[in-house]
Image (cartoon, rainbow, N blue to C red; front, top):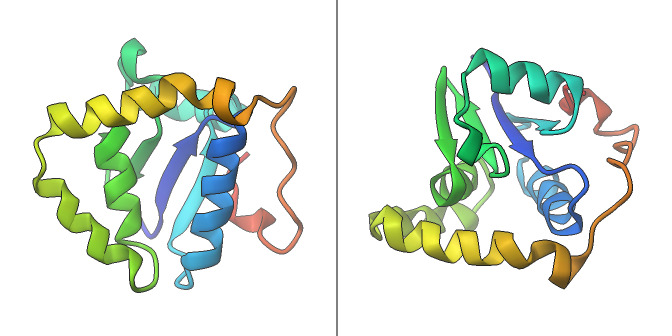
Length: 132
């Protein structure tokens, strides 16, 4: 695969902010994006047989491999310009701890940041990077 695919919650304000952050810092344009709610997102979830308990998680697909939750977030950092890849070093923290922090924030994201009624349409200058 030439590009990694980041699947995200398209109606979450925090998730959409993080996608915009990744777009800004991914100068190599190696990331593609698909909302979990989109037809493409649903096809990818089915094609990769994503377990039901992970469907509400950020998901990264790269070279046919899937990463969920905190591992996904840390792996995405490797695609961004310096200094963000340095944070990938946090991968040494045991997943049960990293995922507990991820799950806490994910569980509060709508209360803290809000929820949209629909997935926003990407700006025309980056639309080709979205698979929806």
